[in-house]
Each structure stands twice: as C-alpha cells, then as structure tokens.
Length: 589
Image 1 (cartoon, rainbow, N blue to C red):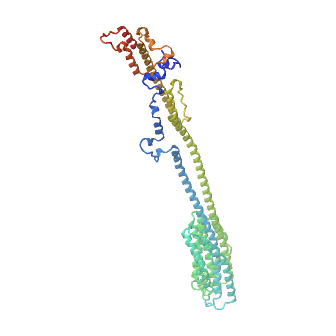
Image 2: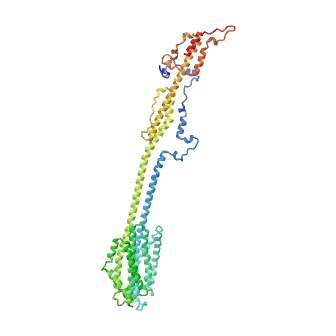
Image 3: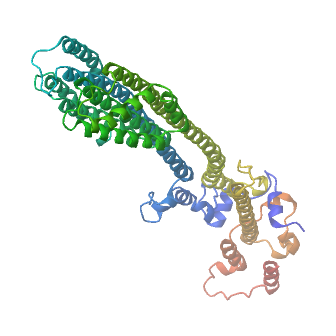
C-alpha cells in the first residue's frame, strides 16, 4: 500500500481536494493567508550563524581581540612566517655588506695614506740632501781651529748657492705633503690624525731650521739634529699605515718600507758627518759619537728589514747594495775613517777626497731610494687591490642577498597563494552556503513538494588533496547531510498535514450527512473506503488538524433530535442504538 505522503503528492490539480481556504478553516487557520510551515532550527538561526562565522567575538559579548596572533588572517600569518627568516637573512646580509663596505673604505684610507707616504719619503729624501749640503757648507767656512770664518771663500759661496737651489727642489715636495696632511680628517684613526698634525707643524718649522743653518754661528751638529728631528717626524708617519691595516702582506710591506727609509736616513747622516770631517779635517765635538751611533742604528735597521721583508723585497735590496758596487766602497771608506780618527788628530792625511765620498754616498742613497719607491708602490697597489676586493665582495654579497630575497619573495607568493586561494574559496563557499544556499533550499522545501527538489550539493571549488581539500570535502558532506535532514523534515510535515486534512474531510462529511438527516446506514462507507478515498484526488485531499477532527467527530456523534429542544410535556425518545453502533463503528474504523 503506498504511503500517505506518496498518495498526497499524487493528487492531481482540479480534484475534489478541499481548497486551501477550506483546509485553513478546518484546521483553525485564518483564510486568505498562505500555508507556510515555520522554518526549522537550521533556518531560524541562519543570520545569527553567519554573523557568528564572520565575527564570533562580537556576538559572544566581548570586543574582538584582533591583536592576538590566533585572530590574524591566514595570509598575515603566512607573511609573518616567511618574513621573520627572510628579515633575518637580509639583516645578516646587510651586516656583511656594511662590513665589506667599511673594509673597502678603510683600505681606501690606507691607499690615501700610502700615497701621502710616497710624498713624505720624497720630501724626506730632499731634506736629507739639503741637510748634508748645508753641513758641507758649514764645513767649508770652518777654519783650522774649528772657528767659523766671517768671510766666505769662493768654494763656500758656491756651496751656499747649491744649498739655496736645493731649497727650491725641497719646496716643490712640501706642497703635496701639506695638501695630503690637510685632507686627513676625523674619519681617520686618532693616531693618523695626530701624526698628520705633527707633520704639518714640522713643515712650518723647516723655514726656521734653514734660517738657523745658514746663520754665521750655526754648528754642523746642531744643523744635523734640527733636520733629523723634522725627518724623523716625517718617517714616523709611515708607521701609521701599518697600524691602520689588518692585511698581513700590507703590514709587512709598510714595515719593510719604514726600515728602508731609516736605513736611507742613516746613510744620509753618515754622509753629512764624514763630509764635514773630511772637509774640516776633524770632527766637531760629539760628531764622532754621532757617527758610531748612526752606524749601529743602520745595522739594527738592516736586521729589522730582513725580518719584515718578503723574499722578493729582500732580494731587491741585496741587488741594490750588491758586492762590488759603490756600497762596498762607501762601507770601506767609512770603516777607514772610524779607525783613523782615534789615532790621528787630523784627517788631512787619510787620502779620501770629500767630493768623492759625497758622490759615492749620494749614489748609494739613490739606489736605496729606488728600493724605497718600489716598496711604496707595492704598498699603494696592495691597498688598492684590497679596496677593490672589498668592493667586489660587497657587491657580490649584496647581489646574493638580493637574489635570495627575490627567490624568498617568489616562493612566498607561490606558497602563500597555494594556501590562501583554497582558503578563500572555502571561506566564500562556506559563507555562501550558510547565508544563501542552505536557507533558500530549506525555504523552497517548506513551500513546495520536497520530492520535486533534487538534493544535489555543488562541491566547493577546492580540488587539492591537502588538509584544506579534506575540510572542503567534509563541509560538502555536512551540507549534503543537512539537505537530507531538511528534506526528511519537509516530508514528515507533509505526511502529518495530509493525515490531518483527511481526518478533517471525513469528519466534515459525517457532519453534513447528519445535518441533512440521512440515515447513517445508507451512507456509511466501508472502513477501507473511508480510510482510502478513491482516486489520487481523494488521497491528496487527506489531511487536516487533529483537534478539528475530534470536535467535528464529537458533533457527528450527537443526533439532530438530541440537539433540538423538546416540546413541553413530550417524553424523550430513546435513540436508535443500532444506528449509534454503526456510527461508532465507522469512527473507530
């Protein structure tokens, strides 16, 4: 036997099913209003559910705590997750870049100091030559007893012209040193700045030294000491390059350069002392001791040079002062003078011309000067190479950091979009189902026959197989189950309504027959006919309200004669018990 819901759905339009107004009247509803079932719990709280989905903190009675990490958007958390290691890598790369850049700037300063040192050594060389010529001039105007002549001899006058000409050559080398020392600012190490200031002060002191040297009462020893003080300040500036550099090769080159410059200075001091003694035929007071100290200092400087110099630099120095050269003749003449002086009061019989000695030592100093210039060039080239390497290193590190940053950003975008896009589609689909799709489907099920609505769930557009895809499939399953439950609820309501309408229609028919006074026996339908009206129209007409059916059934049980008033004096006629039994049987059936 088909179910009541099936029979109710099979009723065709135009059948003898009671109209909507009759059904509403029978069920106690006001006519003229459509029959609309109250929505279920899922449809009633739909707006609240959507608001809870969008802003759970607001509906829960408290302000949303958006500052908490758990309340951040997934995209923001992904950006934060990638940004922290990326920022760390960028910070480390930036630190390396800054370090390389500072190293490049440091070696740029070292190269600047090396260039200044080249000018300083050139100035020291000219001052040494100027000093020795001045000492030679003093020796030429010194008499046999060591007294200074007021009248200059032709040789002394000629030598004075040589000294003054040397002033011109020396002044040409002073200006570059002054400019280089002025360019040293506060960005250099304090020691370098102090040394530059000392050089500037000594450059201003040269004029007074010259004035005192050509005065009538100037002594040779005093002139040597004054010039040596200026030259020592200039040569001390070379040591600052070694202190400003962290490169071992550059440090050793600058240290070797400093020792060569001091060897050259000792050669110059010896040249001045011996040329004075050979010209004046005797040493002035303390000059022989100065000669011995200079020889000892030169030997110490040569030993220090061998400790700092590389094999190539050491070989360069040995070639310049090779055996059989003028250096041997100078060394031999010097030894002769040192041995001859203690046993003789005068050097007139030593047999060493002063011009020859001065020329041989000057040539030897010139060879040492070539070694010095070579070392200065090596120091400058090394500083520039280190600067270039530091710049290249900074550029490479910067490029690598930039490349890593670009790759990190690219992968961040790719990975972030691969996660954020499915989440956005899942969120949009879930909100659309919760706010529009599911309530609309439930509403249509409550208004029309639920069997005519296909329970077809459109899957959320997430086709991945990760956790996001699993959540999307689970949501689709929940959506499908919600629609199935809504359809079952609508079908159940339809069955109940059909049963109430059927009972109301049957009770109404009985009441009408009782009102017309028709016998219950002749109009009594059989039980199965009463319960199953013929045809689809009859089956669709079944339904109604249980309370209305009970009231109308009670009215039908009371016969018309019982409801009419009896005339006065008329006895009550007993009811027809057979007809009552038939009516009760019909109702019970």
